[in-house]
Length: 123
Figure 1 (cartoon, rainbow, N blue to C red):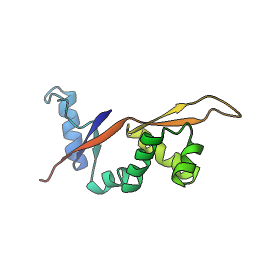
Figure 2 (figure 1 turned 60 degrees about the vertical axis):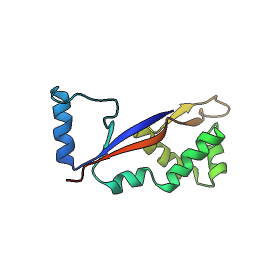
Figure 3 (figure 1 turned 180 degrees about the vertical axis):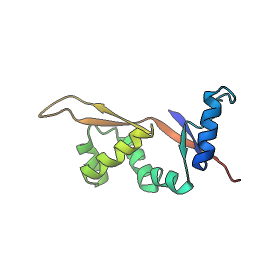
Figure 4 (figure 1 turned 45 degrees about the vertical axis):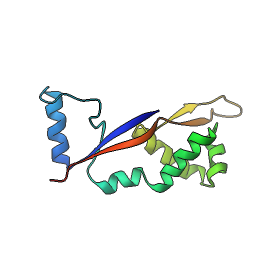
């Protein structure tokens, strides 16, 4: 698996950094943040204890659908779908279409990262 490098900084600082990278003034290093948050609270919402538990269940049990994951976690499918879509937007999970049995194809969640490195601007 891979590590996800995240940065936490005020919006204006993220914007300056992104523009400097685009202009070639800053060279991206392998450990440069790939994902940015404006606060620790915003990052904590994504990487909450509940979401980390969900990722662990997915990694350990390899559910073949959200319905199967619902049974494993005792969370409602609508809640799981919303959470998994958010984690997919952040590049933490991938939802893969499974084999169609009845109706539409089930979505199978896969964990893409196993740890997060945080770069936090203090001043």
